[in-house]
Every structure is written in C-alpha cells, then in structure tokens.
Length: 473
Image 1 (cartoon, helix red, strand yellow):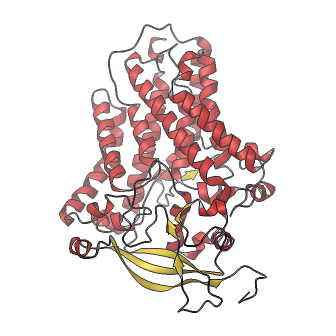
Image 2: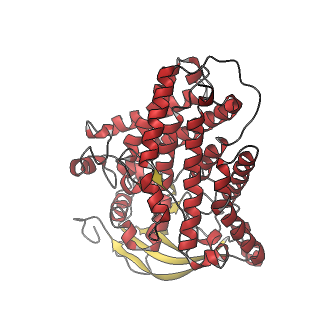
Image 3: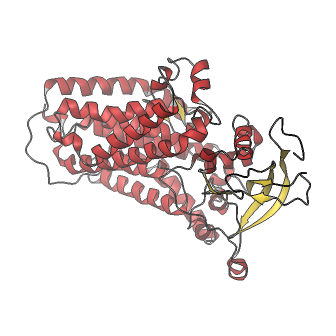
C-alpha cells in the first residue's frame, strides 16, 4: 500500500529513535543510581511491601514475580545497556520483527519500574516516556519507510501533551488568564536551574508576552500538526523552540526533551531515504491493529480534556498506553523550602549546634547557585518541593528519610550533595524547619554573593531521635 509509508520522514524517524533511546538511557540511569534509598528492601517505600498489597493486574511488573535489590539493579542496568544499543543503532542491524522486539524491551523494563515506583514515579513524564516508547517500537527500521499512521499517532500524543497543558492552565489558576503567572513561576518552580533567577528578573511586560506566547503554542499550534506540509513542520519547530526555552529556565526531568522527540515526528526532512522494499503484510496488519487499539483507548483522555473537571497526568490503563497530561494548573506565589538539620549534642535545644543537610538540586545554602540536572531526574529533591507545599504530600516517606539520616544510611546520603556528619558519626537528633525563600535582587547578589534570601516560617518536624535511643546516650 503506497499510503502506508512516508519515505520523506526517513531522517525524522532516525533522529526520533536515537533521541528516544537517549531519554530511555537517562531514565534507566536515574533508576539505577537512586533506587536503593527510595524503593529498595531498606528504602523509604520498599517495593516488597508494595507488591504484597497491590496485585499484578493493577500494576504489571517483573517485580511481582521476584524482588531483590540485586534484581532491581540488574533490571535498571539492563535497561541502560539496551538503550545504549538502540542509541548506537542496533535495531537497524536486525530484521524488522527483531527490531520491534528490541524496542519493546526497554518499554517493558521501564514499565516494571514505574508500576512499583509509587510516589517517586508518579509524574507525567514517566507515563509519557512509556506511551511514546511503546508506539515508537512500531516505527520500523531500515527495512521499511516509517508508517504514516504511527507518525500521526505520535503527533496525537504531542497534541494531548500541549493542548492538555494549555487547557489545564486556562481552567486553573487565574494568573494564567491574567498573563501574570511568570511573575512567580521561575522563583517557585520545583527545581530552579542556573538561569531561572535571570528569567525571574526579566521585565514584567516580557513575562506577560511569554504567557501569551505559551497560550498560542499550547492552544492553537497543536491543531496545525495535522495540516499539510510545510505547515506541520513549522508548528513542530515552534513547539521545539518553546520546549528549549523551558529547558533553559528550569529543571523538568526529561519532560521537555521527550516533547521535543515527539515534535520530530512532524518534521519532514526530504532526502536521505534509501530504496526499500514495500512493507510486509504482517507489519501492516500489526501496525493497523496497534493503531486501532490506541485510538480506542484514546476516548478517555479526550473525555478528560473536554471535561470541566480536567485532571493532569493520569494514566487510564496499567500499561500506560494512553494517558492524559498537563502541568502547573496552579502556580505558587511564594517559595517554601523544608530545611533538614541534625545535631550531635545530647539535648536538642535551640542553642544546640544544628548542622544543615545540603541537597543536590533543591535550594538550601543561600550562596549555592542552582545547577542544571535535567534531563536527569533528582527524585528526592523533587519530592522535597511537594513536602514544602504540604506535609500531606510527604506523609508516606518523610519519616523514613529522617530515620535513615539518623542512621547515616549510606544509600540515602548518596542522594545528597553534602552531609554535615562523618560517615561513622550519625546525628543524635534530626529536625526540619520551613523557610520562605526568594531570589535576591541584583544589588543583593553583588553585595552578599547570595542567590537566595530566606525567612523562618515555622517548625516542620520537631527534633527526632531513633526509637529506643535514650537522650544523652
């Protein structure tokens, strides 16, 4: 069938697949390096405890059959290896059917991780990677030109990402309608980047222009993805520019990068396509069957988008095949940070020597300039932002974090930038306090060298010690 493939998108497919493999590699690396303290057998939210109460049908995962920290590590590192192989083009050296299977391997491995990841993996970019990764497995390899229907379904994902985010903003916080949300967002976003302070101090009229441009990109431009070329390519290019702007202004894991990957599906780059044989019948049947199934599942995200009670970042099936997306339906006006401190003193008095723990990404030390970590995802740092919004967001893991700090747990301390205590001398008490943070002005930065200023708000967690340890012992 001549209509089935699109040779002009040969290079677009190549770029899309290699970029997707790179995102997979970052995701698996993040899992491999952070899981022990978060999800391990002695982690804050242990996987064995989760699979004991949640059945396989609700969260399909390899770890329902077996779990050990070694097995989890093997799964994550295997995902890294397969992703690296795909990044190097291993699928192109295989028969078409084997290339599809190879692409489904990282999807299945990462699905197993996400489905037991609990709070640490409860974000839209996890489902977005899985949905994109599953569909991209059917893009084919060098044996065939990319199927038109898969390219359009990738654009359908991109449409839902952008349009869903645009709708949730208009229906949510009034500052989006008033064009004032960026007066606050660059300062209060979950994890600022090195340029976030610069963006925050831009003139307010420019902030309003940014919001207006965002509304156009998310509410108008997505419809152009389904128009003839070159309009569709121009729409995709505009989305890519917008996402790169977001990359510069903050740390949003791989959300922006996977969105850019999706936008490549609408970029037509003529030339470079070798002569290939027509797609085999079994491949056409498989792709059309997958497309029909995904379109059927899309009814729920569509209902969600048109609903006045639209929700963000919801998966409608345990395989994360079709999901709904959105971001920042509400914007915080002030930034709060939970600062964790410990002391070696025998009594947790206010005048004790309290030493502060430093995180890699979240603000703490006033002179420490935020770093760029995305697309790598610092899961504990990200959840600490939610903990500052409300203790209810941290109820299932914050106590476990404090307990592990009191033990000087090696895996937990590896997630931090700096512990104020030697490895063999854990603190006697740990406490947490809530502060309001704000960016310093340009003058304050010159005079003090501090990127942040903070004001004490209240006690977050009173001084706590390990159960069974007597005060003064």
